[in-house]
Amino acid sequence: MTNITIIAAIANNNALGKDNDLIWHLPADLKRFKKVTSGHHIIMGRNTFESIGKPLPNRTTVIITRNKNYKAEGCVVVHSLEAAFEVAKNDTHIFIIGGAQIYKQAIASTIVNQLDITEVHHTFDADVYFPEIDTAVWQETSREYFAADAKNKYNYSFVSYTRRS
Image 1: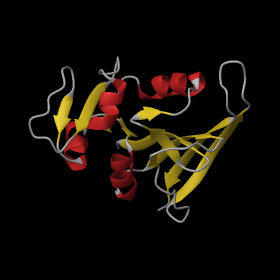
Image 2: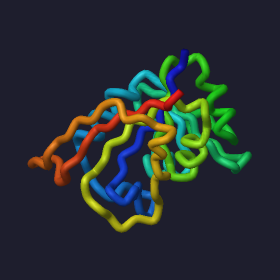
Image 3: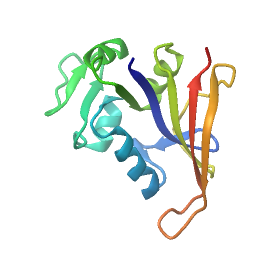
């Protein structure tokens, strides 16, 4: 069975980013993201890919775009979430890494069975937001709290959810 996980860092007000970029810098979150996604397919929208600027090492980058002529060296380009899942179907763990439009489609998809959320305990001005997590659909299964420190400016928590049956 393949696990399909939405992975995101979101603020108290569900903020994801602004001007096609991250609003905060949490090295602990980036380190964890690298650890859990390495060796797997990561699915993202074109804007998210362009904000990153290149394929991430030791991962298969799958980009979803409506632009039929879009090409990105070292990446797989598809035109729907379903096509992205098909490309990655032999992976044991697929990660959906953004952006907001892709998260909205994916969280509504019954094929997604896990959420891996970094809650940044701060409110930010943003122009893109993560969809509300419906606790009737998603059950929190673990939570680890971390206080801000010299490297990580904000308090944060790593929170896991699984889809209720």
